[in-house]
Amino acid sequence: MVGWVVAAAIGAGVFVTLTVIDKFWNSIAGWLNNTAANAVEKVLGYKASQNMKRAVGTITKIRDKLNNNSIIYTKRDYFDTTIEKVTLTSSAPFYDQEQEVRELFEREQTQTQEFVYKG
Image 1 (tube, helix red, strand yellow):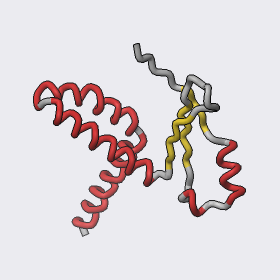
Image 2 (spheres, helix red, strand yellow):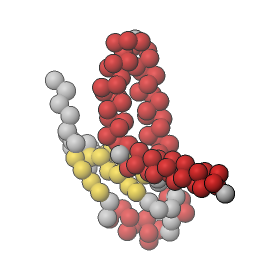
Image 3 (cartoon, helix red, strand yellow):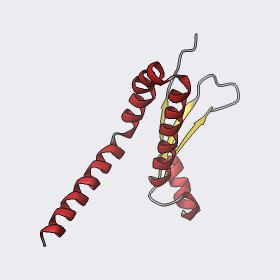
């Protein structure tokens, strides 16, 4: 009986930890790709840093697939100089949605503009 209580407590702890990590993954991934990757590069070299960044990118892709997120980078028209980052979140896989739901989803999407100076 005590073993089941301990197992349930461990399972609940793991679930809460994974939920918190999932909720703050973008900030964690940013820290891993910048601060931690720089430290790894100093100690283990450039290739280890690139492998670490590739692993973080893979985890982000898996997380987005599990949460049905799609991130699209697009321009409004051919001559536009800015790129829009559009994040689409769905409760069902995109291919399972009806056309009306897809149109409603596209109208209510979140759009942000992010600018990066490359000088």
